[in-house]
Image (cartoon, rainbow, N blue to C red; front, side, top):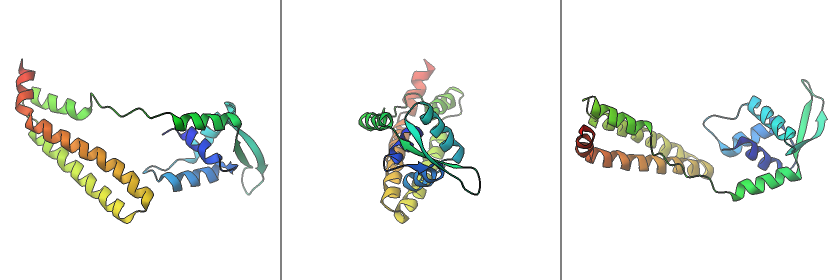
Length: 174
């Protein structure tokens, strides 16, 4: 996800301090890794340099002065273009799991145990996500559904690969 575009989108509702943006980001997007303050301020500095935000006042506080940022017309245009453009689908034509399967076969170790262990890992992750989804609000449910659908696709691949291991081993032996 583009942090810069996300912060711009959050600024469309009105000017905000970096602290407020970080809190709003964490609340709305509930990432497993929250956004760090340093990342917020470095992103705001880059957006300011590129003319996508402007300073909209400074307030003195107990610590350093707090700058308030507002989105510019160029920033609004940037968000509009970003929202209209589709994301590239995640296509994994060469991933680590496939590499491990091939290397297990080539080394004579076999890949059944590898696939079984991976299946178990995926199922554990799916159980954790399902529990999180069950106790979560709609935003959490949607985020978990996205991850669950990807894990389900991986499980289908694991099953298909397990069924084709002998054929793959013969092909690799050529």
